[in-house]
Each structure stands twice: as structure tokens, then as C-alpha cells.
Image (cartoon, rainbow, N blue to C red):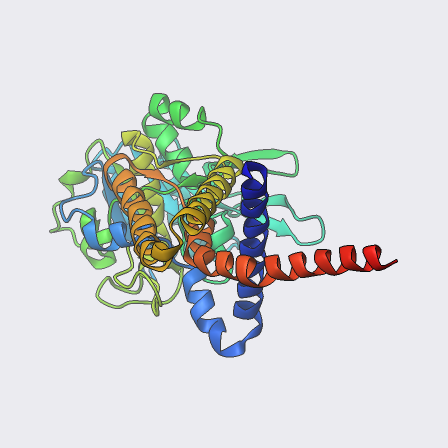
Length: 398
């Protein structure tokens, strides 16, 4: 009898697995569901914490962000000179100067970068080869703009198709070159010990512990930085990041801007919310404060999902066998209580400990387990029993 029960649980689990597979096919094939499915794919429960519960104070007073807008090269040079006069510890310039222009336009910037060579990091860009599915080269500004570099493109699966940026790659190999990310290179220049601790985690992708948008950092618009009456003393000893944040901060521009979990609309996002240079600022802050987001390895998370789903199927099957009169009432309550408990633990562990895990497989399995049990016991099991009985009767007649 005991062996029969465990066999029933196993076969019910197979029914539930088939049900999940069919539901996934329906969601992919039915056109009117596609926008809804795509929206859910780009949503994580932890986004709610970032978008609704994020603190409103300054994210990191050690980082200053300066907008370069659409400034000319000579004006960017003036910004660098004004910033350098405040003795920042590191300057990060998130911009590319791939081609030469006239000496009048290039010479001031060449001189400003050369004078700052000891503490400036320039942006590079990794070039992806679709045929080999690897990065085959690292593109840098023209050689006349020579300084240390870090790749500024956000290397993450989510970066494709305007999806939400949640993680980044600390370093990548491009051909024979090993290049640190722009944020990691800047953090290493500022605090090599904290950065070594971060790199020592050995993760190929790291979740970004977002601290806030540009309003939560010390920020200067392009015109402010160039205005000689503006007090820039806050930059002393700090990290100063220069990058594009629209022609001015008052005008949102859909260039070098990304969706992030800080978006005020966690699901069904319409407009991106964070410029690339601000994403780098958040990464740098996370590294220097050693406030990482941790998670289970992918294989362990899958095992936990399957295990929890199977335990749920076992428990529901036990109720069906031993408390059949109460089955509907108890399972409805459990189908509500178990997912809510899982979601609460997810929220709490992320909010309090920045530990991230996801249990979509387990939650979906539990949601259809009661139906799976009834389909198995009332349809499939009876069909199997009748088929077996028919075969035995046929054998007896022979």
C-alpha cells in the first residue's frame, strides 16, 4: 500500500510536469498573451523592493556624477581641468573619441587627458563576434587619447532587447586581452583592497545592488560644471564620473539609458530610467561598500524548486488519500498560503540580507497540483486500472 502511494505521487508529479509544459507552450503560441508573457519575463519580485522601498537619502557621497551632455571636445577638456583642480582621487570618463578631428578641437582634450593620466580611466567597448559568440576585440578611443581603460558596455544577458539591467560582468576576455569593466577599473583605482575582495568572489556575472538614480548622488549638469562660479569642492578626494545624461538633466533623452529595477513601474515598463554612467556609479558604490547581492548557484536553485514542488505534490496527495472529504477546502487554502509564504521569504531575505532566490517552478507547480491530482486519480488512474483489468480478463478467456 505504501509503495502504491509513492508510485501515485510520482505519476502525479509527471502529470503536473506535463501540465506546466503545456501551459508554457500555450503562453508562447497564443499571440494575444505574448505582451503579457514578455512583461512577466522582464519582471522579478525583488524589483518591487528596489522601486518602492529604496532609501531616499544620498546613495554614496564618495561618488560625484557630471553630465557631459553634447559638449564639444574642448568643453569636455575644460570640465576635466575644472574637476582636476579639486583634486579628485579618480576621474572616469564614459565617452569614446574614436576619430581624430581638427587640432583645434582635439588638442585641449589630449592635453587634459595627458595631465590627468595618473588618475583617469577612459571607457573602452568590447566588440561581440556573432559567428564565434565571443568578444574578439576591445575598441578604445584614438591612440592620441591615451589612458587606462575599462569596458563600458554592460555585458549581461538582460542587456539584449532593451530589457532590465540587473547584473554585469566584472571582467571579460577579448581575443588575447583581459579587460576589467569600467566600474571595476575605477573602483580598483580608488580602493584596490575592496575591489580585490569583490573580484575574489569569482562570479562571471554579478547582480547589481542599486542604491539610487542620479538624484541620489552628488550631480552636476554640464553648464554647472563649466560655470566658474559653481563650487566644486565636494569633488575633493572623490570619484568623479563624466558621462552623457541628456543635453541637460531636465530633458530625458533615450540615448545610453537603460531599464533598471528602480523604474517606478516594476512591471510593464514604458520608459527607461537610468543613464549608463549612473549604472556604473551604482556598481562602483556596491564594490566599495562590499554590499553585494548573493544568490544560490543556478543548479541548486533548480534542485530546490523541484524538491519543494515534489514535497507539495506529496502533501496534497496525502490529503487526497486520507482527508478526501476536506481535500478541496484544504488545498485551496494551501495553494494560497504556500506561494504567499515563499514570496514573503523572498522579499524578507532580499530586503534584509540582499540574498536573492527565485521559486517560480515550485509556485506554479503548487498552483496546479490539486487539479493534477484529480486528473490522475479520477481519469488516468481509472483508465490504467480498466486497461489492466481488460488485459487480465482477455488472458483469462484465452
